[in-house]
Each structure stands twice: as C-alpha cells, then as structure tokens.
Length: 152
Length: 318
Image (cartoon, rainbow over all chains, first blue to last red):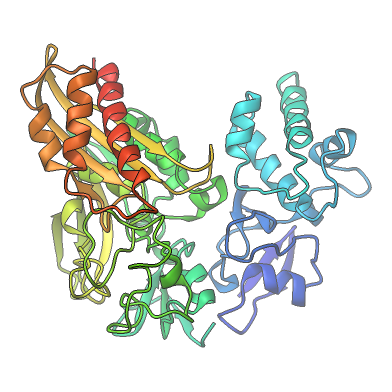
C-alpha cells in the first residue's frame, strides 16, 4: 500500500495510529501542512483528498483513499497557484502559521462554488481559524480568485 | 493513543469498533476517552453504502454518505430542515469527512467525558459525574439523571426525530432491522455508558427520511458558524389551510438525547399558528427542564428556538 501525495507515491506508515498529518510532517519531509490543535478544530492541517478538503490530523494515514494534495503541490514549478498569489497580493496573513490550511481550504471553497459573497466565504471558511485575525484580507483574496475565475 | 490495529474484513466484537469518517473516533482516541483494540475500516464499503435514492414519499441515504455530499443533493435541498442541519453542522472540512451514520452516533462534547483525568460515569461506569454541580453551562437541562447530564451535541439526528426518520441496522449475523431514529439514543439513567440501542457488531447502513410537511431547523449558537447548538429546534408541520393538523418537534443542544417534545406538539395540534401559539408550544417543550444557575439562560433560548422554528416552518409551507 502506498500514499499518493502531490502526484508522487510514498510509503504508508506501519503504525496504524499515525495520522496523515504526522506521517507527512515527520516521515515524508512534507512540512508545509501545519499542526495546530491536532483535534480538528482549527483547520491548519487542511489538505485535499481527491479535491475535497479534509483535516489531515483526524485522518489515520492507513485509511486514506484517494490522491492527496498539500500546499507543496499547488504551485507549478516557480509559478504560484492563483490562490497563493492572491494571498500575497492581499496580505492575507501575519504570522503565516494557518496560511497553508487557509489556502487549501480556500482553493476548495472556490471550486465548490461557495465564494459568491463575503458572507458566504466567511461561512464556508469558518473551519479555518486565524489567531492574527487576517480574516478580511483572507476573504478579499478568495473573492478576487473567485471573481477572476468567473471572468474566465 | 493506545495500540490498535486496522482491518477491513469482518465485524467488530467486544472492544473493537467501526471507523467511518473518523472525525469523532480519532479525536476521542487521541484524548484517550475511547480506546478500541481494533478498528474495522468502512472505507472499502464506501461505494456500497453511500448514495441517495428516493421514492414518492421517502428519501433513503446510504449511511456512509458524507454530510457534504448529502447537503449537495437536490433531494435533500428539498427537505429544508435536513439541509439546514447539515450545512450548519461542524466545519466544511469535517462535513467532507464525516458520514451520516457516524454523525448520528456522535459522542457528547462534555468536557469531563473528554478529560481522562476526571471521573465520568459514561467513560468509567461508577466513577462519578463532576459535571453535576460543576461547570455545567453546556450540559443537558432535559433527560439527565443522577449519573449523567452530558448533552447530545448533533443536529442531523434532531431533525431525523422531528421527521420520524428510520434507520436500517445490519447485525453481525447479516440480518437487518429498521428502527426509528427516536429509539436509537438512550437516556443515561443508571447506565450512561450505554448510549444507543446498537449491539456490538451492529452497523447503521441506511437512513430513511419521510418527505412532506412544512419544516424548519433553527440552531442558536455562540458564534455565527462552526459551533455546536446552544439550543436548537426542528419542527415539521402538516397543515390544513392555516390550521395545524399534526406537528412533530424535537430539541437539540439541550438534552441528553435528540429530544422529542411531545407536549409542545399537543399544544400546536388543531391551532392556528401565531406568535402566541408558537411561544406557548416553546414553553411547553421546556416545561420539564431542570436548569441550574449557569445554564438557565438556555431554557429561554430553547423556548425561542422552538417558537422561531414553528413560525419559520409555517413560512416554508406551500
């Protein structure tokens, strides 16, 4: 059994207790995904599995079914993903610790079609906490990407 | 976390457990509040036990359907109360992971239950209940016992009770039975560690939601999104013109189980809905509450949630 992360195959952990988050950070040198609360409450560990946003701290690695995308898998070579560029453009962070999870969740928020208004973005990004409270800038970054996509 | 192994085949026996989305199970295992010896991963059964089908009077959901997938489905969007309960539960990420069957079985958020340094009759039978007389602001005002006042935290099950929904349960011998969701959860009584009517090895395979009725789910919480209900109410009305011919009302966030408020239903039946009857039903729903100094405000919130849900359901009637 292997794990497919950002298009590459990695070994599964032997210990069934290992979460996807711990496995990536401690064994696979994929430290972009952050550990905040480790109990599914803060969203810092958000990754995509088959395009859907999930919490890697509550996902036992051996039960992962599907292809995982992390913050390391968003950019194409030196070209940032539009959401990464928008976070830079809108200054959507201070300390940056929650940012990888915010960006992964934001990518899903737009692809789900839940970025139609500021209030809708706030509701559908509520699973990602930001202790620096960069929420207005985060919502602005997401709105700009959603708008750019809508304009094609 | 204590040691365990994961397997795909077979059925759990004593000390083992199913794992579906894992959002409650893994959290509680990290805390040490639960420690199954073996997990039976339902991932391989995802395709067989998920999906949504409907007949003229019922919507059937596979128990491994995620909360997110259910909320997206056009048939569920037509059941206003169900849709509201699903999209107002947890966070978008948790809804992508969590299954409907697992969500019905969500464990309490009682902080004493979650803290293994504390006694807890639910976690360690006979060890005591520090919530009684302790920090009880979030605890149940309905359905508690001298052993346990832990609140059932979910939303979807509350709407299921109001709808009169049923679940199909598959036993370890392969036999199937159907029970109302209302009979799934048990009040704590003298055995708070026995939370449901499920036997070891039982698996919820499907949830059956009756269509019809004017409905609403009102959830009051401490922040605008991503919070458990401080008080919630689900209402399903059948009307003849402006008169209520039958009503089903359930409360969430206030009781040890998804709480059927039969007294409030009797108040509404045969009446015309206005502010006065809606609040009278709300007061009837909470008339047996046992509040304490720190959670008495939630009785008032419960009354208002019921009243608002009744008025909102009437507004949703066609």
